[in-house]
Length: 437
Image 1 (cartoon, one colour):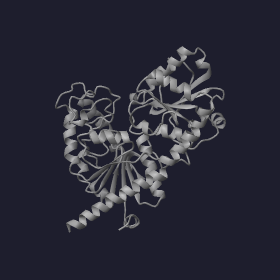
Image 2 (cartoon, one colour):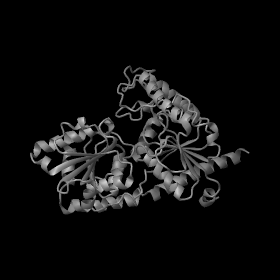
Image 3 (cartoon, helix red, strand yellow):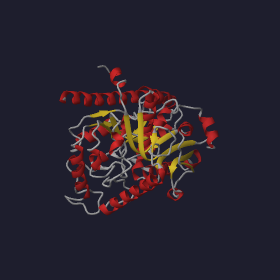
Image 4 (cartoon, one colour):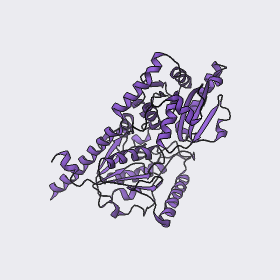
């Protein structure tokens, strides 16, 4: 049986996510799903919070489900607080509460269940082993192999069985992270799962973990619709966005730009202060542009002018913003992939980031951007200056960046890789069933 026969033999994909388009993981999974639907693949997406209008996406329908979606999210936050997480801004999920929005019969028609970002109580741990379908699980962060945190930062306790968690107020051998790790180990061992890492770094993290060290893991990058995210005229983009024509524009973007400590805005602000200390006219020549939620109070000590564009939900406008900028800075501490960096490069705008985690799969030093030494704000400042210079080398970067994305990250490429994997795990399930008859 060849691939085309298997694809035409009743492949049905059910995708699970907390949201369809709210957040980087949601947008990444939605892009894959959208492309598969365009390719004719039967696919449904089930989410807790639906913000888009796609008919193949279902969210909380009816008053009861809408109430429950909010109740379970708030209850999950309460469980996290009671577990002793020190910082309220750290993202944790225990998924210990039942969720009637995902009844067992929902999985019956599916031949493959694609799990994406399912925190905030979306997919209860106890229900995973009862799905009884081949699972493909994309690692948008580290939650699948930790004791509850989505971002472990420098902690390596997940290589054993967690416990003594540095993110908890009272770390101990049998703390909340260890107890949750034990539950996760119990339920994951009862499933047939194939994991997908969007970067080689994330694959390495998962393979080093005690939970996923012996399971199959493939690397498939997050894809991008390069027909939407394309290079456009900088001057026209600035005119449409009412941004200054004469200044060098430094772009920074994140869903929660100032409160998500992982996105590294503090590193960017330090780098800008360094540049101001070296050049008294820096503020006259540069301006910072921010998209995402951001409180102006957090920018009160900013050494240069700033324009805040707010939350951008339209990809076409987002591409216009990237095209208007001279450089995009992505100073994250930890990224499983780096969607903002990819979007910027696809629009021909070079990226400055730290040489760490999943961003190293996307940003190539002095080929399409600049990779600063890990968390070195002086080097981050150097990269920003270099990417804003006007010389033949810098002028060649937009074309290189665009070609790199087209050849490696186009959604047409990555969606086919997912389809091949879905067909493969579905066929293995069928063959396993036939062998048991």
